[in-house]
Structures are given as structure tokens and as C-alpha cells.
Amino acid sequence: MAKLTRRKMLAAGGVAGLAGVAATCKYQTQLHLLRSTPEHDGPIPSGWAASRVQGYRKLGSTGFDMSDISFGCSGLNDPKVVHRALERGINYFDTSPDYSHTESERALGQGIKATTRDKVFVASKFCTPSGHLDSDTPVDEVVKSVEDSLRRIGTDYLDVVHIHAVNSIDRLMSPTIHEAFDRLKETGKVRNLGVSSHTPDLETVMQTAVESGRFDIIMVAYNFKHWPKLEQIFANAHQRGVGVVAMKTLKGAYHSQLSDFTPTERQSFPQAAFKWVLSNQDVSGLVVTMKGFEQIDEYLYASGQSMTDRDLALLAHYDQLIDDHYCRPGCGDCLDSCPSDVPVNDILRYQMYARSYGQERVAMTDYARLDPAHNASQCAGCPAPCEAACPHGLSIRQRLTDAHRELRLA
Ligand code: SF4
Ligand code: SF4
Image (cartoon, rainbow, N blue to C red; front, side):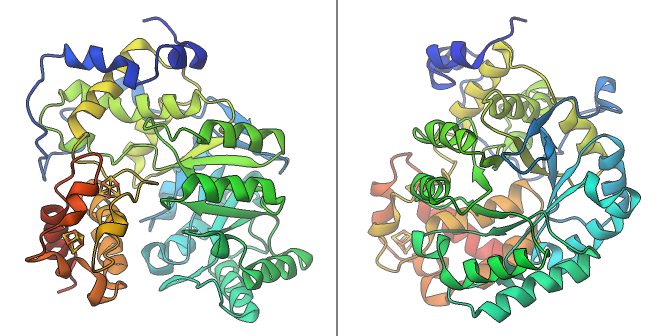
């Protein structure tokens, strides 16, 4: 199969330009989501076994070369999975106090004892076990939250601490969080400042972060949906020595639930999606949640690989199937139309955590944090003006009604 350069792909109009390929596929039926389809059909391809990291890239000006496919620790609770990842060459781990209610940080700390500290890059968040810190949290509390992370991980320092879930410039530049970071850096407890976001204002937030000169790393929702300005923002980041870490690369991770996907397509989809992300040379690496040994084999099979025409056709087919189902990170076009200020995009993301990533507990906990006056209980009986505002035709009211039923804590 021919290898494609990124330039060649963009010249061809990217994934969208391959819509014609998808249109000629024999699978022309409506999208059907199967709730209980297994992750893989049949045995795992033998070629995946023992796959290793094949590519490392500079992480901005941090002096660290990160594994192109790296470890997201959401849901982690077994240090042995970290051991396996280290054996296979993964050296970047992204955790947070609220992942598995601190269990992720503890398991990661146990796991990385298998190597020397300077061989791994540990990322965590300004956060507590029960959730993100508000932008006006007093400095001492912010400092304490990071010291608690250090204690749980069993390390003297974090390589990067992210201001998490940034949804505004005010939060991005929160004076108390920045002052806390400066104090922690002075005492050697953190080394780099990062920002993570999948806000509707993604491009504005990331552009401001890069141009502020305050951030060493940006962690960005990035997949073959292709936010128009992100490529330029990444190029700018690269030029200024800011590392770019991609997340949410599987675009909803619906592949295992698509009845119109062949078994081969289901198996190949994550690797195709990763290759697309890494075809952008301004991306330092990507982080993807790895729940067990099998996913390490599966995901690392894409490390260091180039995209093929077949990968692009597969991504185009996926796009076609999820088009009226996938709530785009960074969109938010419907939000102003809701009389109850329901955070439609956040709730659909929680639903995705539960349905596609098997993270029901995380999803339910996140959902429970919403004020009932603004959660999806408001959708019952509403004429749903939000649906007319969605350029992608999502059945928002039905989806949110389902989410409310699925995510309510019993
Ligand atoms: S259906 Fe739900 S999200 Fe849509 S406008 Fe009504 S309350 Fe808001
Ligand atoms: S439901 Fe539609 S309009 Fe609303 S955030 Fe998602 S994709 Fe955008």
C-alpha cells in the first residue's frame, strides 16, 4: 500500500477529501451503535504481540524525547500494566488525582519504581480527588494539591502539571494557579507548566497559551476532525519550544460499537487514527488510555508507522458512520440556544466515557457534579431548540435523556 505524506494528504483535502472513497463502500446503512460489541472480533492479530515504541519525539524545550504513543492513566489501577508499558518503551505517563479517585496516581507511582525516575516523564493536574480546582482557589490550596499528588505517586517532582479543563482565558491565566506553579517550581516540586482542554474555545485557549510564554506543554483534543487553526497553532508552538501532546485521538472511540464496521475495520481503526495524528510532525506525541496488556500490544503497533491510503479510507468510512452521532470537542454551537444552560457537550463527553471507554464510574462522578438545574433532567418536555443549532444534526434531546438515565448515580 502506498505511503502518504502529510502534504499529499492535505493536498487531497484530508479525510474529507476521501468522502468519495467512503461513499463507494458497500456499507451504506444508517449508523447503528451496538452497546455490547466486544473490543475485538476474534483473536488479536499475532503481529501485534510484543509491539514496541518505534518513535520518540522532542517534547518542546523540556529536553525530553517522549514516546510517540504514550500512556493515559485514566482508569489505571494495576502497576503491572505500567511495568509492561515501560518494557515496551513507553516513557510518558499522564495521570490526575481524580482518575480512579487517586488510585491511578498510586498505581503509577508503584509502576514507575521499576525504572529510574529520570527515564520517565510524569504529568499530573492541578486537581483534587474530587475534581478540578476552581480558578480562584487560594495559592496554598493549589500548592497542597500538588504536594498530595507527589506523596501518592511517591516522587519528589512532577515533570509537568497541567491546568486542566481550561474553558476560558481567565482560567488559563488564573493568578493564584500561576503563583502556585511559580512557588512549586522554585522548590523543585514541578518542572513544567501545561494546559489541557477540549473546550469550545479550544483554538483561542491554545493560541493564547502558546503566545503567553508561560506554558511548556499544551495537551489538546486533536483527531482527524481537523480544527482549522490547530495546525498553525501547533507550528507556532513547535517554533517557540512548546511541546504538543494530543489526546482524544480516537474521535469518540465508537469503532467497537459500529455494526457497519467490518471486524478488520474495528481492529485497524485505532492504529489508523494514531498514524493520522502523528503524521503532523509538530505533534510531540499522543496520550491514549491504556486499560490492560492487550491495548499496549494493539496501540504500539502503530508507533513509528506512516499512514497509508487504506488508513485514510478507513477514517473516511468511520467519519461517514458517526457524522450525526459524534459531538465534536471544541464545538459548542448549541450551547447558547439552551434556555436551561445545559452543558450539552460535556454531558455527551461523559456519555462517551461510559459507552466507549468503559469508564462508567468516571462518567457518573463527573455527571453528578452538575447542578440539577442545569443537567439533562431539564430536557424532558423541552422543545429542544438546541437541535436546530447543531450543524451536525445530533438528536440532542434523546441523547441527553439517555445520558441522564445512564449516568445518574443510583
Ligand atoms: S433539549 Fe435539553 S439541551 Fe436541548 S435546549 Fe432543551 S434543555 Fe437544553
Ligand atoms: S451537540 Fe452539536 S452543536 Fe452541540 S456541541 Fe455537540 S456537535 Fe456542537
